[in-house]
Image 1 (cartoon, rainbow, N blue to C red):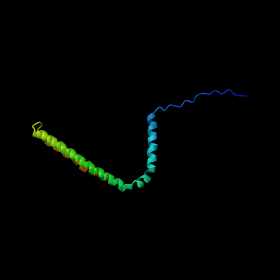
Image 2 (image 1 turned 135 degrees about the vertical axis):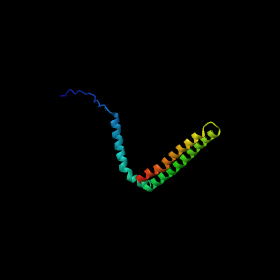
Image 3 (image 1 turned 180 degrees about the vertical axis):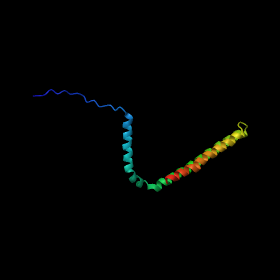
Image 4 (image 1 turned 90 degrees about the vertical axis):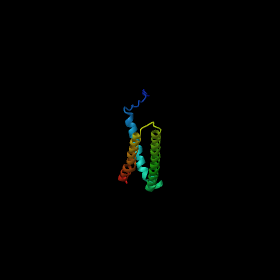
Amino acid sequence: MFRKIKFCAIKLARLKDDAACIICAAKSTLLGAALLAPELALAGGGLDSATEGANTFKIWLYSFLGVCASCVLLWKGAECWADRSHWSEFVTLGGKVAVVGAVVGVLAPYLWNLFT
């Protein structure tokens, strides 16, 4: 009347590549966020709010880098004044600061304008 039923535990197949599973989950999360993004952008103020935030960050970044560059040059100038360093190193450092400032002040806005 009753059949003999043999119960066996179901073994789950272990994924060979856990990274592929993580990447798949990240892709679906990103797709879901992209589908919800228009509503969230409009709820958060839209593009004008994002542009204003980017401009505020840009002003903060330029101010911070300007203060850091001034501090570095003052420190190196004080070392030269105390004869702990040569004035040629101060001039070289001034050139390096000018190059980095040019990259931040000229190249970054140019690249930013390519996307706007």
